[in-house]
Length: 227
Image (cartoon, rainbow, N blue to C red; front, side, top):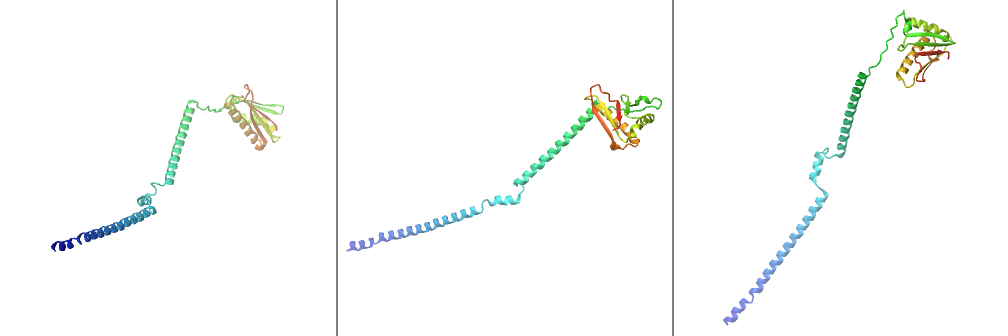
């Protein structure tokens, strides 16, 4: 009898324990599933938020310091620096040219011709002024380019016949490839032209020609003829 009664109590212990443990495991699995789903949803939402607002710290740095990464500003500054460098080089070049010109003038000084002819010897600057068949030849000495008062009267007297026509042609022939001779010839032609203007010949009616001739051309002779 006792053996049967004790057997009835032990038969119902293990099935109830198994049911309780099974329910506990199922509940834990349910809670774990909910947590996994929650974490997954939270991670998905965080990923979407990051894609919509990328690198907020970089945006803030751009707003605070726009000039530090602005490519247009950097390009303008580079162009400005290049312009300043070019201006500096141009100024240096101009200074070097001026210095070279000063040195050149110092080594090859200009020849200054001062015509100081006393009235007693007017032939020193003007050799003669002759009328050759309607053409007047005004002959200067080597470095003379102007006329003194007595020479002026002589030249005007010789040019009076041409001045009455109201027009004149002045011609001087210079040696080839000799710039100094051309300069002297031009000054001499202008000196004679001024005498024609003083004789009431209109300036627009006076033709001046300084032409290049042979190597032996004489630039001291100014040929004046009616136009």
